Length: 303
Image (tube, rainbow, N blue to C red; front, side, top):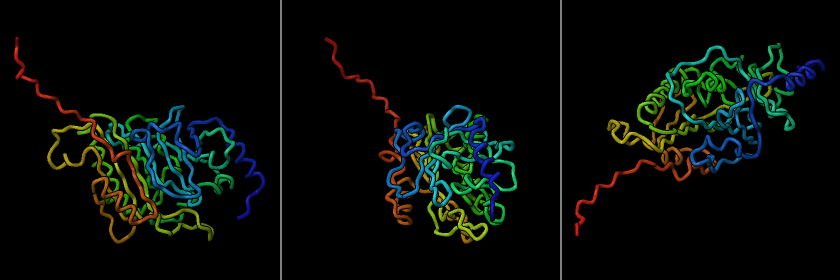
C-alpha cells in the first residue's frame, strides 16, 4: 500500500508532539535497573535486534521491556508488583515507542495517531493497532498487566504496544487472566516487601501477517516468574513452598490453555529446553531475606 508524502510529514510532527509517556531505549537497562531483583536483568537471552526500553509515564519510570524489533514484540517485561484491587483502566489510549523509530528521538512515548493508516515510520519499527484488526483469534496480551498495578498512572503505562503480544483469546479469558489474578491475591496476602515479576514469551516461528507481510511473531509459550524476598512464613501450607520465588507457563495454541505452575528452576529448565537460551531469570535464583530470631542465651553465668 502506497503512503502519501503527507503521511510521512505527519509522522515526524507526531514525534515532536508533547509527551504523555516517555521511554528510554538503549543497549542497557542502566536507567531502570531497579525493576529487576538485585538490579540484575535476566541473563542468557540471545538475539540480534533486541532493544532495551525503560518505560516512562508522566515523568516517572514504570517498568522495563526487552523488545525484539525484527519480530515487533516484547520478549519480556519486568516490573515491581504493586498491591492492587485488580481493577483495569478502560480510558487509556494505546501508545507507541518513538525511540524504536529513531535513535535520535528524545524518548517520549505517545498515543498512536487517530488516522486511517499508521505513519510508515512507526509501522516499520514496531507493532501497530492494524496488525490486530484481522487477527480474529488473537488479542493484545500485556506482559505487565494493569491489574498488577495500584496507581492510575502505573496502570495507564501498561497500554503500549511495546508491552503486548498476540495471545489466543481463549487462553487469555480462560486461563491466563485468572492466573494473573491468583498471583495478585497471593502476593497481596503473603508478600511483605517488594515483589519483582518478569513475564515473557518464547517464539513459535509463526507470524501474524497483514497485506501479505509478516508483521508480528506469535508466542508459543507465555511465562511468568516472581521473586518476593520477604514473605509471610506463616502462610498456608498450600502456598508456603511458592516463596520466595515461583513461576508458571502456558501454551499459546488451541490444544491446551492450562497454566502450569512450577518452581523457578523448573521453569528455567523448561524454557531452556524450548529455546536456545540458557535463561537465568533472577540473580542467584531469588534469595529469601527473612531472618530467624536467635534464641536468647540463658546459660550465661553471673560472677
